[in-house]
Length: 360
Image (cartoon, rainbow, N blue to C red; front, side, top):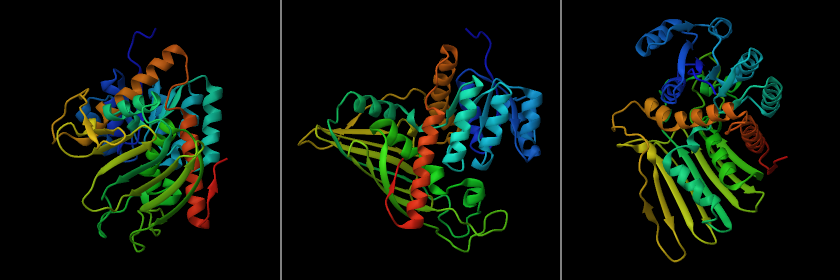
């Protein structure tokens, strides 16, 4: 058994701040931070007591040599960083979407398989207490035969026409827009809970065609998308994703089966919002709320990244650490990331063709 804390280096300090909180809550030692804006990285490191700061991830890998590398960069960098980190002997936590496309994801999977090291895709929204209970009930057969599933992930981060653009609007860096940001979590939830997709059809849009991505090109990644799908089980799936929805910040999933229905909603406001709201219904009954105790307590004004880190990243990391000690493949696996990537690619192909796309 490992007696010392696992050391961690984090590349990317946007969502990477949630990783910082999560790794620490899971008992790891964050020893290095990396970001192109080194001055900003130094400020964050000073605030959090992290000893090493780098502007280049290559230098961080060479000099810090952490046990675990956390990749929270734009997807265009995921493959090269994962490859270098695992070839250097590190385990890896990689943000979603796993890659730019399925081909890259397959290459990442091959690298991990030959490295003898563990790697996971950061599908951290499996871990809120309400979602864990939802999953337990599904696996116990509470729904019976599942007929259809509805899900959505909505926020208004870029709903205003003058909202500052980011790399997330640039398909050459992001691979996908709202689907890669948010929709990929819904894809993972559906796969994790109900099995693989058989086919999908989709439509998407860009809110402001005049908006420019940071490098000067026109924003070309979708801001909203609607997807209809069919699972291998025959169940139907429909979900909506938007980052230009005024007045809302939440995700939800509902499932309806022969024996009952489950409904989960996680908003982004109020005390302990991370717990989520789980409701259940038996045949002939209305939905009733299931009371779920929080595993950690937060005020309504707490930093959302700290909440996400403690409530969703930390349990994911603990699962990874346990798998490393056992020599098992941790979950959510890179294969989970690759399968989700496959569906992202099919959604994109459907948007371009206007036709159903089979999932191979």
